[in-house]
Length: 76
Length: 406
Image (cartoon, each protein chain N blue to C red):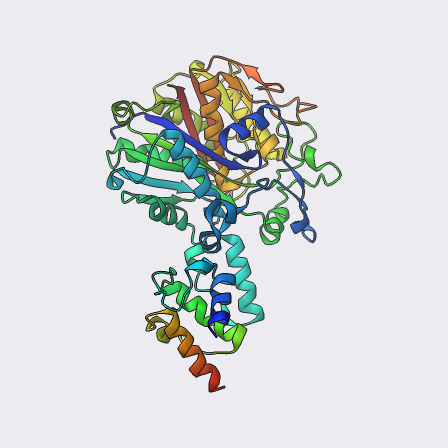
């Protein structure tokens, strides 16, 4: 799931790939409030995983987002 | 109102004539027209445009920033960096509270808006990007530049259609005159070459249909002109209070010494048939500069190449300046950059004054005999103490800038 998230962040949001690690914070990868909404839309569109922008905003690291994706993806 | 001259200490250009001031100057003086058939307009009623050649936003700005900026802001940002470097100013070390950003544009981020409107219609509201307004609002031109450059003084974007660029420079000088700041980054940018925009302009009958000779399509003041060629680009200028420029030992390229702004109050697209609005703006700019008509050695005309504009403008210029200063329309090379035109042409005017050289009007093979002006067909050396640059916008809004030698 980390690789899928990394592909989306780098490929769709144009976040520099080398900055995307499990430990990276939203600030590290410049994930502001607008980018969080963008990410929420792309996750739904590309992977059919629905995570609201509010939930994504609560994530402290990329790893937290991956765990949200895994929980939501497994529930599908 | 107190008034001061504004020292032009830096300029930057990203236009169909090239990326960078020197590339531009070489091409407009050549003159080598930029108009060409545009593959993205293959299904549009008019298929000719003037694009910025080889502009790669990812290479210039990085993928992340390019992704979050509409093209009209991308072009402006690159031109702004050149203008600041030219002025020898480093945003990292200036007092941003004494700096302003006053820019112009015609219609903001139209490509972004059109793309997201398609998403709305084809996929639904849920999928519309949250970036649509941060990218497309016209004022983002000033907003993004202020964020990028740490400018915390006045920031605004003016819209007077095709006069926006000249209006912005005039309003920027007003900010200096009022003492609101010491430095203003001014100019304009537009990137409106889209099938939707072209369709709209084509319906007004304003665009050239010369598809069999696209390089010859933009032909201001020529008897065979049939309309303008739509283009994209940005022109930026650094204006400073003269004492501020002097104190830091800045090189002054020229000075903006006058600004005339009027409205035709006549029609939304057609200029007043006698050109009363542009004539009044010419006289106002001269009065503001404290100059007499005979002081004017050069005019960079609006000269769009539409049958009506060129006749009306020429008649007004002839009435105000019967001594026949050397006139050019650089739109023969660049096409019509709409909201950016007045700013790009202000930069060309600064260069003409500084270098004593008037760029020629491209494609002027058979001058319209009704145009009673001395229009340059070759690069023309002239000592220029004072020059004017004209802009006329849809809505009947006119702006004239007076540019004097340093």
